[in-house]
Image (cartoon, rainbow, N blue to C red; front, side, top):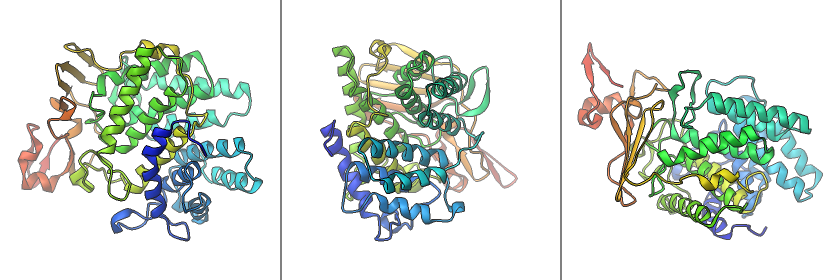
Length: 429
């Protein structure tokens, strides 16, 4: 299959080969480095199948999908994520005039991914609504479901355009605005806009897109706050949107150049995370586990499969991901204006870019999404430098989610965040 974006196809090819090497003859997917099997209740199997379809390897794309479908239903999960991958794959198969048995296999997978009416996190709910829009069969269904996506995107954002993942009903527009889930929401709005060009969707897409100038640095970093900080999951969402928009044209030369430069910066930073087996480390720390800033749900196979599936499809011109962006995109500032302080007061974020220095500060903190007696989530604390960059290179470590035992052993790891020891327990942010 020829690539619409050969440079992106070449960039993602080692990743797809690395995933294929993690598959055994039965279709089981394994974590690299002897870390056991890939968690079947995530979405690595489906997005590995999508990546292998777009970039064929010595493993058939059907192999991981059949293995995953043969599992007991209770061992499968993340239905909205898997259903998105299957919808993207089915569109490809139909456009290619695939055999009926291949379409039946994917349809069986979609039936196995039952969507719920409600989800505990807004990012899941927005994804489920987006998938329903992509599956709409009639113009009337598309209009109604597009309105649902637009309403949710409007309800779950700050005035400046930052996605609020928690709570479901934000008070005064305040809540948890993790960067990775903002990028996921941006991907959802881009997919929705590609499926149905509703003016309300377009308006929300531009709001979310404009928020990038607050959190995306010249060095291609977009993290420091909330879950999956600086994680590959958000990188994949952002790169899919940036490259998908590049396919459509219609931008002014300065806007197109700025978009290309931004995509190159993010892709270059991710390239520095390339492992010897072709996969990518999940964070710029290039280390596994807590030392690399991983949350407990982060797995190499899962996020690499998400990245490979989305970017391989984008590189080969998937119509659901690639196309002309809204006209207003060309008028947006892609990066913070030098010497100007920009802020999202509801999210508690402040950004200053001066010369070669780029500073992102948390001014008043945010609700912690995953409370624990055993861990402190310093990423949610107030008064922290979330990201400091000098000439495109990070100058400070990112605030972590850190175990209480590690803080007892080395309290200085909390930086200037106060800790209180009382009654044998440690209290932190």
